[in-house]
Image 1 (cartoon, rainbow, N blue to C red):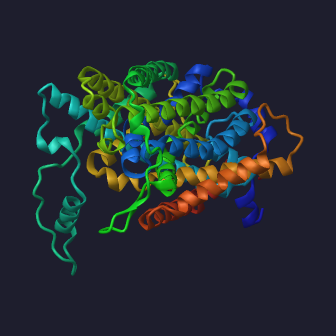
Image 2 (tube, rainbow, N blue to C red):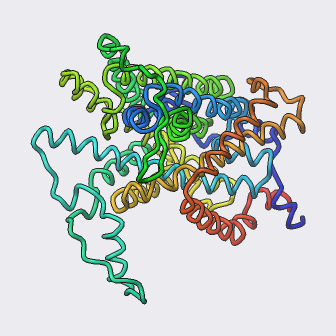
Image 3 (cartoon, rainbow, N blue to C red):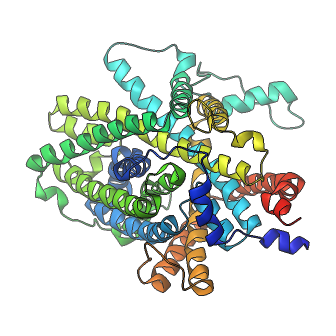
Length: 502
């Protein structure tokens, strides 16, 4: 087999479908609503509790609801393509497995390696944000952590310690840190706690996640149900505030351009449904339930996002919503302190479902890579007691705990976005390729208007990737380079398809 043939080798759709019934790595315990809860858990988090208010204050005004609609339409294009693949190839691995079936092994490895980092970093970012909510509630009860345990060290503090270890080498010496922050204990602790939960029986974790998602949805419905009686429609005028430009910074805000800027920001609050497709082999009826769960989770989340956006900007002027706890702040401003605290508690409980969804997704992708021989088979051993991929899950728990505990949230968040958008492009392109190559395949769900929907999904994702900061590209290239070294040093020679060809 030539070198190029090895890079392009792939599993046929029929082969993957046949393996679904033969594999017994996981126990099939997840029904439609548990899968939907994983999707909702991955989508609804800081987007609804933080971003809605912040983007109203900074970019879109009351029209932040339109920002969510625009972002939702772009995300829906990818979701429709995911739904077709999920019904066609109900195998653990999500975008990695779909890419393997259509575009070949090397592209599949790149997207799997990419998503492995992205999902892990989402866990770390959310864990850091979750820690902030918890500490606010603890402070309201008079409980305060030691200063060293409250937050991770700042970027400057980390640079100071690196200089102490390796020397300045001509660089300007950095002053000793003035604060005492060293390690975010709560963020690290919740990362490890979620990993332990995910090593237990899948149905135990899924039941816990469904319960948590229910609390989160009830909290959101409470916001809408109570807030609707306090709406002052004067706060919605003008619905799209006039465009203004800061003379000092040159940055523009509001107007239609602000609505579109808001859409690019909140786009990262309207994906997460892809995490449920990584649990395909744990679904009771994957070909039927996976497409439904993808579309249901996104639809429910979008309705809630739009409703909350309208309520928030209706009960208080949008300029008052720029805080880190904008939903709680809005109800505090109209004298509903009890509801403000209730929302904060619901946010703390509910955001754990995001941690659950993305760590589950990362562990399943790691497992799929190892099962296909692209990573050592040691990682593809399922726990005989619990039936879960315990080894990659525990390693991910330790990794995300260190990242969340040590690094500032800004340093971690910069890397999160590019991987998911790359996966969306791969999925939308693959669905078109497969329609041309295999038009006669039996599809349980067909992406509607695929020659419009899929290119629109690619265009939307490419535009958002173009707008990312340059440092994101640099770090992404480093991670991809490391992935290529691992693939060419190990994966290409140990691939199961390599042994099958001999």
